[in-house]
Image (cartoon, rainbow, N blue to C red; front, side, top):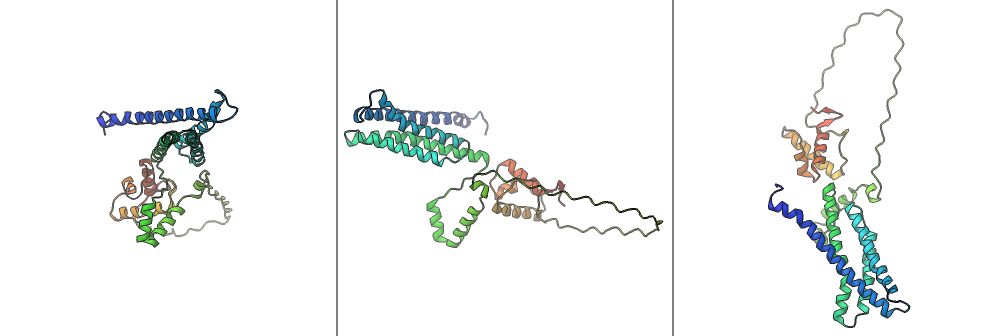
Length: 287
């Protein structure tokens, strides 16, 4: 789509405006909760004055705000923030409970208790969207459960659902589960040079020239089993790409990135690398 179209211009300003409104709603909710917790500390807690009572909202609402910022930082960098998110909601629950108990009527209790919850809830939605944008940019797909559809499919096909669910889990590399970097590939050992044989002092006798070796034709539809370059893929994706490669060779055409996109969802540059790795082996074109 052209960048000068009205849709693209609306997309450019819609995201900043939405983030600004969410931040404004969060700041208002925390500010109102600060006032309520300060009033509770000044009237209901012994030993607190007007100034020292501000320590109460600074502790609970401030901790919730700090955990929210840590969750935001982890989300924009594509890292998990489970502990920060749990602490964020824990401190928000304490703040909501304090706002509830010091209000006189049921209506005011509901409003006061909902202030910190609303501030954190709207911000948490933004964090989920940022994490999804990071996964889309980096070509990663987070493993998400859809309980309703999963139960429905299990009722229809129990064996197939169990097998597919097990294959999806086992396809995740172990180094990603434990939070480590990808293991470095061990280089193959270099062959030891064989010393040349000593020259024969006897005079050489003429010998018949050997017949040239007969070239052996290699099948054109053979799938390269060892590719020197190219991205690492999980076993299910490798099977899908190999099937697409075989189909392209059977049809007598070149294996391209469009064939890769037809079977797996990867970025364009990675699809080009995969197609190139299946088109060449050790730098030489396949027959």
